[in-house]
Image 1 (tube, helix red, strand yellow):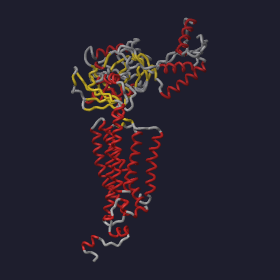
Image 2 (tube, one colour; image 1 turned 135 degrees about the horizontal axis):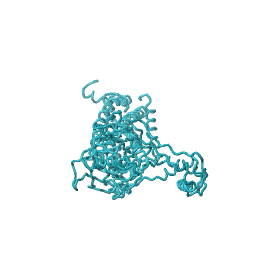
Image 3 (cartoon, one colour; image 1 turned 120 degrees about the horizontal axis):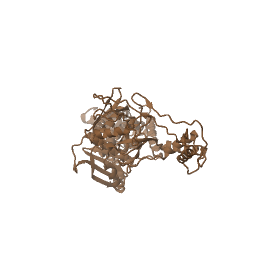
Image 4 (cartoon, helix red, strand yellow; image 1 turned 60 degrees about the horizontal axis):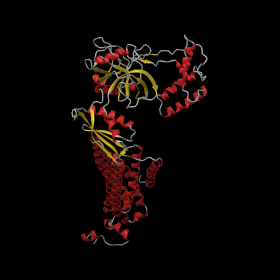
Length: 609
């Protein structure tokens, strides 16, 4: 460091300013919080019989926050914040403008529903996969010569009807209309002490998974032994394997999940699991109110499973057994597949959590297990959802506030102006008092500011007015570091050392002091971040990050910059470093002034007479 300070200083500037330039050219900017951008803030509290309920548990509130967070994400609001303060849930949506929509979305009570699985629709392609599927559809339609405006489903339907009319007792069916039953997923049921079997089928995030014994049953598709002549009016060969591929792709692209508004308990719906697998579900057979509790644990096969316990009576286990009997009866309301019983999907707030196969028509209320290929977290999350049965608490908006974009912009502008004025005054003082060393401090601040801007843009941390305050406070910490360094230099000069060697020597002891001082700020910021919520955490976060950057810039810029200045021709003029003549040793003073004036201290004490 002391051998090549100029190289270190230039390298630091290239990295800091280079990253800043790249960030700006890529158009990245920090994400502004509610108080700076404007938006909507809602405070929700649990209520019971119209009164605030203080008896809710932290686990219930956390479950409610998880549900609300998913709803907020669906609103498309950038960087929403959902947090808990005591028993109050605080929802902040920067950029949101429709307060009623927000209240309707975040405040409604969710319901855990058990719906029969009518069919597996398939995975709906999204993003790049959807674009690829659309391109493949166009290619297949061109190869099969399917007319514009005619779907593969229309071709298949007409082909089947005309083949049926032409062949009243057909021995084969068109491949395009052949139905292939998806793999039936079963799970070996846990046996209760009463010898009653239990039901269940778990899933990795509600996906259909192999049974515990890793066996699956698939109904083989009916195949065509001869290829009939196409009879549809368009002359499309519905027996080509490419047609079946086209049919499936068009079905997948046409599939739409049911919107939250249309997700009614008594209606048929199309809902997806977390991985995007869509299922057609029947009307709700029972709700989470039938569940008394649920737990996650290790089964006899060494895998994680979920063990729900239903309530007694007609509003609990009787409802579940009625659904189980339906799914074991082969009825169209809960059809099975491949000789397996039907499945019952567990749905919370429009998302399929799991779709277990119901192995038996009747169960004891405390002898049911849902098993499969769960991870520990997945099993515990499903147990929590079952345990609470629905959004665990009824939430009511106690306060809703709309912050206009203009007000937010004014707050941001006021914060920037206040910070800029304070920074300019402090920099002016440093330049006046420490001269060239003050210039090194200004450079160090720009290095820290550049890296901080890059961090703010790339990690998408929300900047609030409290965060701006934290940044402004950190400026004072950075200036303190410089002052500690400079005063140590002056102290060494007073003790008779030359300016140039003092700069390098002083930094070692000064940096030790700087680290200790900054650690106190880091500890305070860390504790504040851990214990606080909302904007206060933003203050702690930016104070901590800026303090760390102070340590970096002091070591990699402030020190080498001071060394470069001291070793230049300016080092022959201590006054230009804010060091008065009176602070110099007699030898240094004579060398600087070019006089042979006696040492005033020696003259006073009689030394040198």
